[in-house]
Image (cartoon, rainbow, N blue to C red; front, side):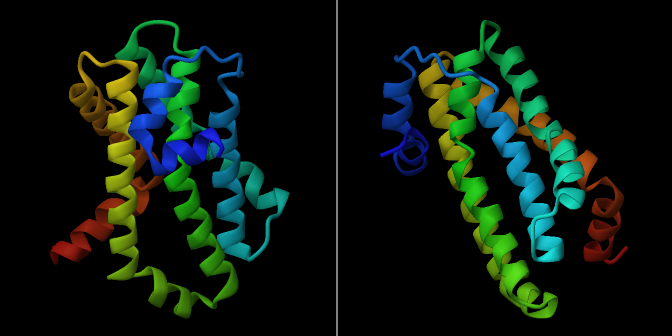
Length: 184
């Protein structure tokens, strides 16, 4: 079983084992893969196929997510973080699968049918499952890689990275959508 699959299915035991192993893996492969995957998913979801014209810019924009996460890992762990970055991005498997599934739904179905499948309540329920599982996976990561303060590290990483990510990627429509939901 691959390391990513082990982290996805049994994060605590996988991270406990992997944190003790020094690997010669290049630390930036998984963050770069995640950014490229985001670009591919954006292209597939919007046009039903992967085109360089859509996937390229989306991957460049999406690279901000791994860069912010890497910067936060550096702040939180305060040491050489090459292996830690590699391990942390193994935990992105749940997000990756969820994004590919959503893009596949939008690529196969017409937009109205896709929204029925991915909109409330099913989309919110699936998002809740992914957010919860990724929080548990990240907690396992911090518990095994920096066992002194795993809860604090998880909360700081989540608050900072998610706040910046939402401001960048949802900033234009986030506030108007929220105000619309609140009826203001």
